[in-house]
Image (tube, rainbow, N blue to C red; front, side, top):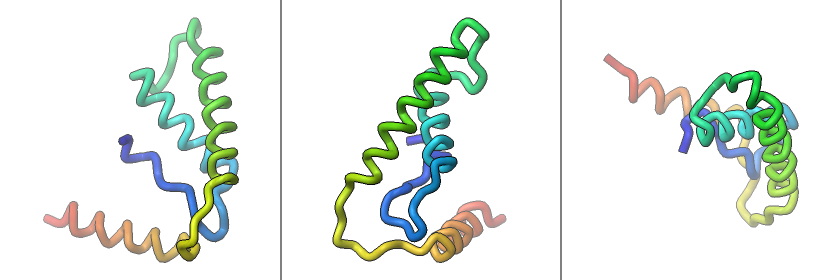
Amino acid sequence: MCRNIRPLNNFEPPATPDEVSAAALQYVRKVSGTTKPSQANQAVFDRAVAEIAHITQHLLEDLVTTAPKKDREIEAQKAKERAALRYAT
C-alpha cells in the first residue's frame, strides 16, 4: 500500500472531503504509475480521482464499527514517535 494513503475511518472528527480526495489522488498516482499525467491522459486521470473519492466517501459513511473513535491528535503523535524511531541515527 502507498505510504501516503492514511486510514480515514473511525476518526473524530471524521475525514474531510480534502482528505478523501488526497487519498484518491495518491491511489490513482500509484495505480497509473505517474504523478503528473500527460495532457492526453489528464481528463481520464482527473475523472478517476473524482470517482474514487466519491466511492471512498460512501464507503466511509457506510462502514460500521463498535470500536471507539480515534483521536486525530493522539494518532498523529503516535505516528511522529514511530517515525522518530524509524529514522533515528
